[in-house]
Image 1 (cartoon, chains in turn yellow, cyan):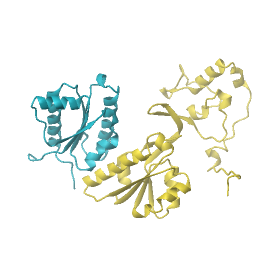
Image 2 (tube, one colour):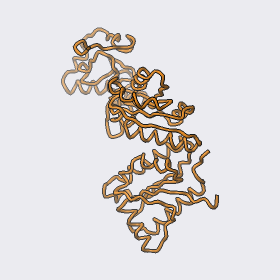
Image 3 (tube, chains in turn purple, cyan):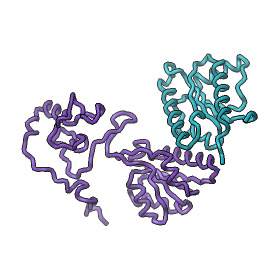
Image 4 (cartoon, one colour):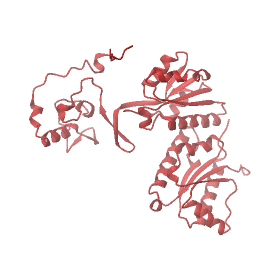
Length: 222
Length: 135
């Protein structure tokens, strides 16, 4: 999933300080699963904005709505009859959401309510960790099913580096050295020699280095 | 400020704090009349939004009264509630409102005296802070 975290409430208050009618829009996708942008969080943010409005003596109207997904235009249409009543929209979806809302409702001022962090998963309740860097050419099978691009601090494809110590990365004792894990895994599977095979340098043109990406599936295009 | 009577909402666990309330009633210990009690089956069920809503509706303070950590029959109810209270404290601080307006207390079922003391302590704290400012 895409993992995000709430923006500090002070930052959001500053963003919308000039508006009296604010619509908070959530998303039932990834941000609901990582407890940052679903219906519950819409309620919490809306309530916080109302409490602040009351404290400041401002007559603030805050609406709440949570879409099935903000990254699909057909769900965004649902806001058509609602959004007109508001001066500003706070989207608490990942970075895709506020952009899709901006594009769909160009006259509205749309603000991001969360900071989008990474693609990852829940490693325990309330803890998420990065697993994918979206490089566009997955090669985790070459590394024992572990991604050195997303999980090595240097994204090394020929690690470990000299900063690996007792299974930890030199940047923090809380960060596992993924290359230590890769070597252990490949050893356990009797595949260590595969790491010595020559491979040409990875092409980064499929990653962000190749510019903004687009995917077209001809069989789905109408 | 002396005649300020804070409006306080107290979420009470039906197993511990509410039993303590009954004991206090039996002891003829009066609870301040400006405290609105809301009984919940377990404080672990209290969501962050439940704790914010009273402030939205004009309350001056909110507290959760639940079990001792080692006696919650649902194991972690009061621990979860304490974390949510902490979250609301952070939100209030971000909104420029004193975080002391919300708190969590742990007590066992027989502590009628303590139940009333906690209520009075909360009233004193919020009274000291004054009403939630409105411009």
